Length: 403
Ligand code: PMP
Image (tube, rainbow, N blue to C red; front, side, top):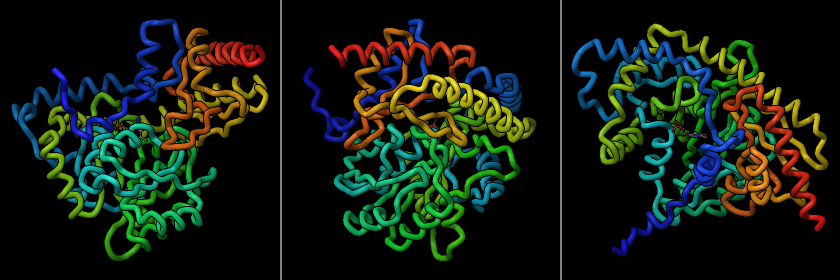
């Protein structure tokens, strides 16, 4: 049958990252492509115990639950956020099926086709997919390593009258970059002045390589809450990187009225997220020192990032450069101008290493000589070999250019 898809469905792109992951499956390939946490660091034993305890508690663990999420877990998230400088009450929180659903639901309740949205370039690929599915008109704000440039932001706020600004200001996916405090303050101030909603997507913020106490960069949501008169920042976070992605539990925080509307959209989407996963997480947070666990994974990811950084630096590839991220899971590598990373990828896969070509993270005008490297998932002992294979692919690529 010839299926007559909706216009929205025709705008659903497939994720390049998932396509690359498929390419690498079942082969002897070291993948620096996926955005995967290190599974050797999952708190498997504690999670197993938490599930065992909730399954031995009472029958309601298998029952339908509230759309907004399991109340005790919402309370705990409110407590954690307040400790991070975002004073919220649990009524301002909806639990979601990962923060991916939070992005989707927010766009669903805010955007009509053709509405303008501002993003950084490069930015999170699956957010671009969501924006495309709602047929948003996506515009890029010029950024440097400290965040969006205020002049360009103001120019685009005036010119496009956007409904939404989407950003990952802390240890970003894909670049690992972190906005300066000054730029954060300026961005919130400008968006408040122009009445534009900000979606602050912060899955990586707690994975900081700075071990000093309270080293979190000030979130846009925290800045926003220091003003009087309503919120302009909607904030989303997740347990995916600090516990495990399989629990599919994220949260979205914002203006109570907006949160109520979002809960209606969630009801239509899936009634509520998994009761048992939320109950297990709530149980986990009672006995398990999550702060200590986050410190442990952050320390290990820091070591893994340093290893990759040292290997890359020691190669001295002509024209290649990167900045070490201060947290998160990704390192952004820029190669010499004449290299197209998407064309390099098949050669790299042949040599036994995979990465994500940077071009997929740009809504338009991609820098094709870039790539995203994940440093959290590959066993550290394989990293030198991965970089060696990448070098072999680069040599092959250069030889082709010469032919
Ligand atoms: N936002 C960003 C920037 C991400 O990198 C990810 C995970 N790749 C998500 C949101 C979604 O995470 P989850 O749905 O697992 O919470």
